Image (tube, rainbow, N blue to C red; front, side, top):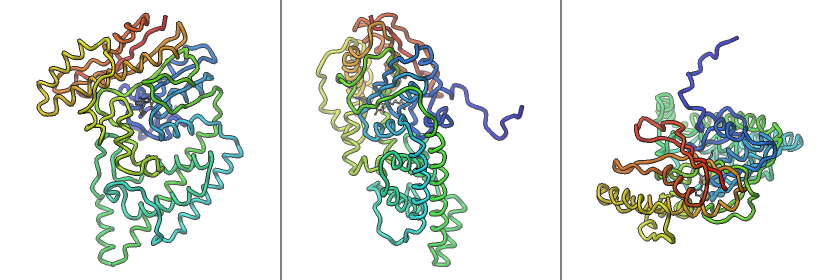
Amino acid sequence: MTAAVGRPPVARNEHLTFRANMGAGRHGWLRLTPAYGVRLVRESISRLPAGSVVTDPFSGTGTTPLAAAELGHHGQSVDVNPFLIWLGRAKVRRYSPETLLAAVDATREVIRTATRTDRDAILWQPDIFNIERWWTPGTLDALKALRAAVDAHEGPVRDLLDIALCRVLITRSNAAFNHQSMSFSAPSEKSARASARDARDSAPALFDRAAAEATISAFALEMDAVAQSARFALPGSAAIHQGDSRTRINQLKEADLILTSPPYVNRMSYVRELRPYMYWLRFLNLAGDAGDLDWRAIGGTWGTATSKLNGWRPETDTPVDDAMAAVCARITADGGKNGPLLATYVHRYHHDMWLHFQAVTPAVKRGGAVSYIVGNSAFYGHDVPAHTWYAAMLRALGYMNVEITTIRKRNSNKSLYEYNVSARRP
Ligand SMILES: C[S@@+](CC[C@H](N)C(=O)[O-])C[C@H]1O[C@@H](n2cnc3c(N)ncnc32)[C@H](O)[C@@H]1O
């Protein structure tokens, strides 16, 4: 047996998170940091009889419906984010041999066109603030040329090309995408030297051309990886719906299992994390769109969503109002000028999850199971036990066998964990 050479050891519990999905075929197509690991999902689903219905009301990158379809079940999911709906649908599609052959031709054509594009051509670029911080000029030229060349295609082939383009955006970016603050790296010594040489020789095209060529080659490699994993047929089926899981989604079949990882109460913004993809694929055009979309997402607080929180009022009581009021009072007291806003954030999040639990219950079969993977959080040192409050809400709706299991410690912060809140509908 040969030992795996040059690979760092897998950190404990990595199989539970997005990182675990990177090598897992279609699951690794694009990253969303809070995606959960496909292994965890497969473990839960593998206990079901063949042909079961598995629902994820917070689809994200479509991990659950894809895993369900891979294991011969029917997976279905819902998300508010139109980009994630598009991605999920592309991930669970069956790609015929003809489509895959057409994708090979299209890739050649895109590379040819992008390579020949005059770098002075005026091409569309997304309206991303400070775009030059994300990509060097040569890379940006190539991305624009690739974007224009991909635009000439349509249908499933176009989706595969767009996924490859998204992957290149990341591999060729200066931003570190593994954290939501998206830090930017300083130019490497090599690129700084090259820039200095360019300035000296007043031949800027030299360095730019190298970056552009590297970007176009990266596209070819990414497309190859995407097409390879698109080849594997899915024995089951899947459907991904656009919708708001706080309301009843009529298209859903009754589920044997709800398996999901909803937004955590930690101010993470999915729109913020996804914005490079969403801008380049034209799901977002104006900065204002992002805030509007985040306001519709549970727990979203990015941009205008934060100012809208100030005027938010609950439309209903929840079964955890007393416990929540006590925690919110402490957050208000200790949070200085941001305290009241964060207390409202915590309140709105659980209020919305209560709307969700009520809306989803009729879409669970009697005797069917639910499993919510969620983390607690802390504001100004005060624990916000979302898992405990989920359990209380499920009990209030009559669910049986409500249990909380600890899955893992989330990071170096001693108080943050990820839990599985599971129950059975009577
Ligand atoms: C933690 S992520 C899900 C990650 C997913 N398990 C995966 O593996 O990629 C939560 C998702 O919930 C979605 N979401 C937030 N509010 C929603 C709502 N009201 N209705 C439906 N989806 C919502 C977000 O857009 C985000 O994609």
